[in-house]
Amino acid sequence: MKSLLPFLLVFFLAACASSAVPTPPDLLALASQQPGAHVSLAPAPPPGFSAVSAPEIFALHRSQQAIWLHAPAGELSASGMEEWLNAAHALHFPNAGQDLYWIPPTADTDTLSFAESLDITSQLAPEQQRFLWRQRGDSQRQRQEFAAAVQSYQIVLAVDDQDAVAYAGLGAALLGLGRNEEAATALEQASALAPDDYWTHRLLGNAYLKLLRYPLALDELTQAYILRPDDPHLLLGIALAQGRMGDTATARNTLQQLLGRSASPQDRADVEKLQAEFSSGTP
Image (cartoon, rainbow, N blue to C red; front, side):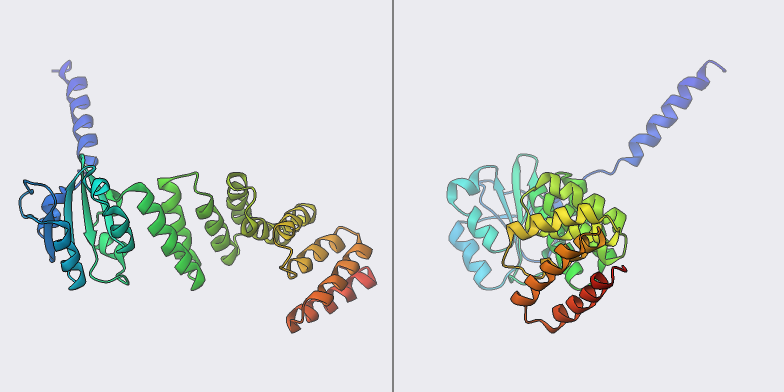
C-alpha cells in the first residue's frame, strides 16, 4: 500500500494542475448563441451560421445589425474586406486556422466592454488586445482615473512587454497617483524602447524633478525641448533643474527666455517665484 502513495500523489497533483488550466471557449459555438446576424464566407458554414456574399454583409451593417462573421483563413485578405472591417471597428478572433469577427452595429459601440461581457478578451488577436486596452487606459487617464488606467496599461504589457506607448501611459498614470519612483522606472523603459519620443522625455523629466534628481531631469527636459522647441513651457522645468543644481545665473537666463515666449499668466507667476528663489540663492 505504501508503494502506491507516491503514484497516487503524483496523479492527484497532475489532476489538480490540469483542472486549474482554463479551457478556451468554443468561439464559433459561443458566437452562434449571441444576438445578431451569424454569417459565413465559407462554402460550408459552421453550425449556426449562414453562407453569404460580401455585399450582403455590407447591407446588414448599413441596417445597424450586429454581425458575427466567420471566414476561412486568408479569405478576407483575398476579398479586400480587412480594411473595411478595421474601419467598422470589428473585433478579430483568430480561431484554429479560421477567422471570426464581431462587427458592432455602430462605430461608437464599446467593443472592449462587449468582449469583456462574454469573457473572451484573451481570445482577441494580440495586436487588437494591445490597441483596445491602450485606448481604454488613455481614456481613463484623461479622466484622471489613474488607478484604473494603471491596470489597463499593465494588461497591454502582459500581452507585449515591448510596447513603448503603454510604458509611457503607465508612467503618466503613476505620476498622477504620486507613485513617482515607479513612474520613473516605467518611463525609463519607454525611453529605452522609443528614444526619440518627446512625450516620454517630458514625462521622465517631470518624474525626476519630483524625485529631486535634477541632473537627470535637466537631461530629459533638454532632450524634449530639442525634439519640440515650439513648447516653451519646458523651459520652466529646465530652469528649475538648473537653479536647484546651483547654476542660478543660467537658470535666470532660461526664465527670461520663457518670459519672452509665453504670455501664460501661470507661466509668468511661476517664473516670478523661481526668479525670487534663484536671486536669493535659497531653494
